[in-house]
Image (cartoon, rainbow over all chains, first blue to last red):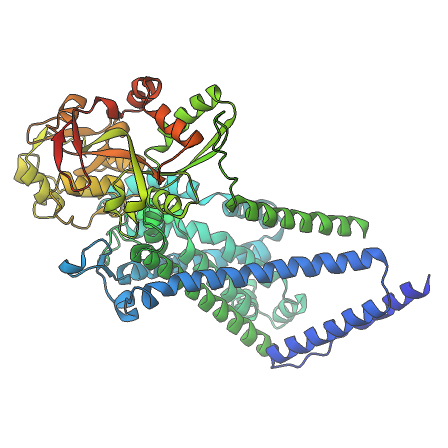
Length: 341
Length: 296
């Protein structure tokens, strides 16, 4: 073993132990970064072998690309999305709290107006209902896979759910349009194009997200906990309900919020079955429109830089802010989950 | 260890290649405006014109091997924006540039290659063949809500619209509804979906370009006039639109040659009618962006 290799090994051994400062994730994150930076500099000083260096450059490069694309995308959507307010002088209040979507109306007739309240409510209603139905279903599936029938569940149910995750959303939409919509029209009532059709399609679409994250967090629990519960005389169901599910709570919540985020951002499949009617639904059988659907419908036909197009970008910015919010919620949940341990 | 590092190298190479490709996508080689006809032409915009432009481009490229024509969809708004910015050579639009706010129409040159008629269509189960213009306006503005008020069955009317930004909707609103504001109804992005919904939903009414009619939905005459080619070319049936190919300024070289080719019998007598459009050369009337009609 050459001298440099030995030095490398020593440093790598060091890197296993990174002191954590509990309770301050941001500070401990910075602290980690600092340690890593110090190590990079040390490595450089020791003149690393070629493949070490290459690996370092490649991974750093990939990380840089990821960071740069995120920053540029956020910057682009923000500048585009804010121009409806800054350049065209639309008030944020009118944008968020008005249901009048009349971007083509002439100024002399009181236009143009770009209120997105109906779309926002549509998005919230459809994705919330989907999560309300999908979450219990998914958690039950996860319990089945992780606890009730680990063998069978892992061999049959998990691949089945992975296939669900792999089906393209246009296929979900088309199945919904061809099967679900006529079924609702003939058996439940209304046009078929409805909130109901939209959230049923979404329920199936977000199922894999919630199931896989919940399964992972259930599996990650120490086996001793279950054994301790059994030793105390609890039945299997009691162990699941009183010990395992509460212990995996933060993981399950993360899965549910991710599912909600996915439901909120889904465009195509929902657009095909909800009927896209620009008003607030009063019944579950009413057609509805979501933010994503309203964007895709007009994007291609409005000239860049026009008020109409800018308003669509503002809706995109709103979606981006919603997803930032969801990520914050997930961070918060995992922070609390970590503290509980 | 080796395997892992090889994988990493591969992954990063892929990422880099993607980025480089994405960067190249935006740039476009300058069109070579020389006599022997060569160069690249990009035509972007309306999905209604896309099939026509694609087929014509294939034939044109077979005859002029030095020219490469790329036809893309994206919508009329995208077409007009791209050609105004100089990002595309030809911007396809199914409405006049003057009718789109945010486009400086003065710098664009219009080439009207074909005409497409639009018809009100209803669910085949409704026993109505004709509506007066006023009845049509009342239906689409939400005043009439049941088919029985216009002589049909006792069935609730379901409106199926295209999005407000769509050229088909703009044309239908202007020439069939006299500019009346439509009531809220189902909105669908594509004409294919509109056709499917009108066909399957009891009581549905919508509108489609004639090129989308396949017998699965019922066509309604307006004021007793059927949306036929003869009625459109003579100006009897008013609901139709030009298919515009816009260029920024007067085109030259390959672009000019391609636009001229679109007006030859090779295209006008074969591709245009095959796709369900009406040749621009056969129109007996002309219409300007304000909707004023006069004889040719």
